[in-house]
Image 1 (cartoon, rainbow, N blue to C red):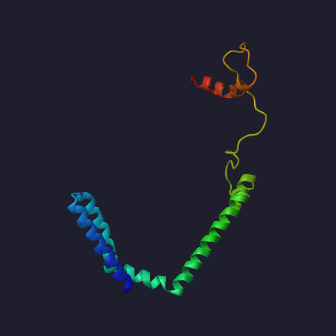
Image 2 (image 1 turned 60 degrees about the vertical axis):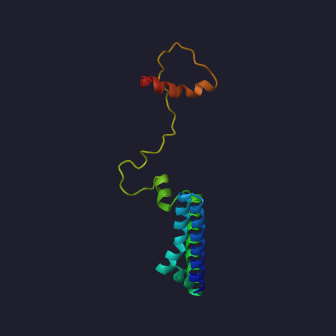
Length: 148
């Protein structure tokens, strides 16, 4: 009962402010203030305010919020542990190569770490620069191969 009275008073005050704003020839702002001030009355009329007041003073509802919070903490905790371990058990098995699902090439997307050969660049007689530009020679070779 008190919540409904407070909401009605807030709406009345908001409508009064909207009237004063309209008197000052700020009609767009007055309309916006009137819209905001009608929201509490609409919530009272739909019963939302009564439901919220009953929920706020209900020990069962607060216990339910506590259970939901505990469930959220458990989900967040297990996700944090998964991240530290490197994924779920199935993801770790797939990364190790213990995949027994019958995949044709289970390690096909894994990068090769063996010794590689560098493709020949356009001119074999051009001297290679040493230092940081040598790091980009692989990229340059790929770009030249594709004509870029």
